[in-house]
Length: 263
Image 1 (cartoon, rainbow, N blue to C red):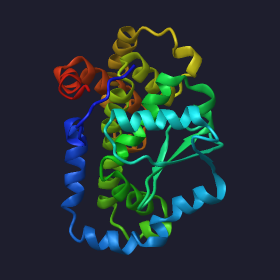
Image 2 (spheres, helix red, strand yellow; image 1 turned 30 degrees about the horizontal axis):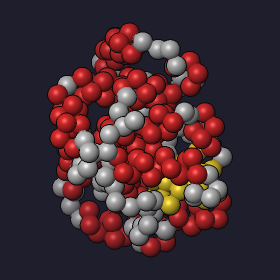
Image 3 (cartoon, rainbow, N blue to C red; image 1 turned 180 degrees about the vertical axis):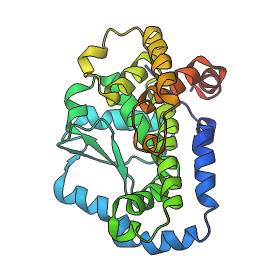
């Protein structure tokens, strides 16, 4: 059973590359003006209105097992709000986050149907960690800036690159949050393997140490050829995430956090 980490803050485990990427964004001239221009209420409320219209709400009455996992993760990571929870038909392995005044999670039905409790803790922990940061503020604008042609054509490529780089690095912090939520390294590595494309059942009997060594070899092979495509999760990025999380788990910082905040 994972320990409750009372008093845990996002600053305790935020990845330094996440910090560097967000600081680079904050230095962009007139970024606040961009937030004002693109971050109006219609855009900010879009995901929530979509959830209410298309997704299935999860609560203690409709799906107590899943809702209880969300409550447990919020308690473990010391997140003081219980987000609204929805599910939708999707094969995605990422729990979406959204909401303005009230945070929300959208859990794909694939996760609900295929993940055991430990894997669920990691997946939900990643999402709750994003809620503990300014992720929603920047992510909503980043998606508009990068994906919606109507707006993106007016935004310099250099700013789009900064947004894309931050979106990538923010996943490293979320991975740490997932590990702190499940407090099981093999579970965390299994989840990242699933995200990379490995079927869930194939990861049950993995040797973490053997897989990490394979990741290190593969990562070295693609390092020389990396370019802008790495910002959209091309070959090598999944391996890097696994290596980064395993190194953090193996180092002193992860253990110190558990020692400091375990309730």
